[in-house]
Image (tube, rainbow, N blue to C red; front, side, top):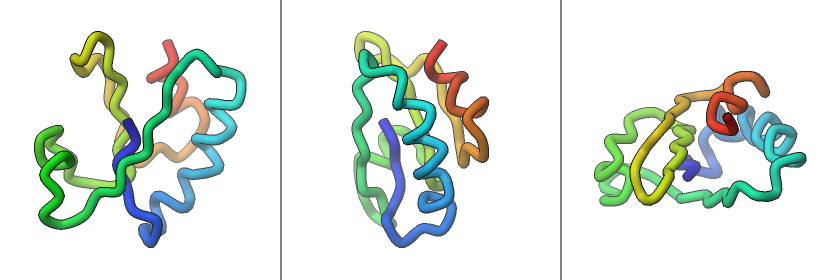
Length: 79
């Protein structure tokens, strides 16, 4: 799951990093979720900063990355 907002400069900067990291991993399902003040789903996952990337396995969180700056930050989720 990728929580963020299209107007968020951190999300915009991370977009190219995400695309590069996911380009070779087609087995991973990537879902972008528009988050913002008062959005319940983001609060359910305790998202405080954007973008926040959360890896779920069988519906349970197994890894999280907040504001990835490079492809290595995202690769943590792909392991």
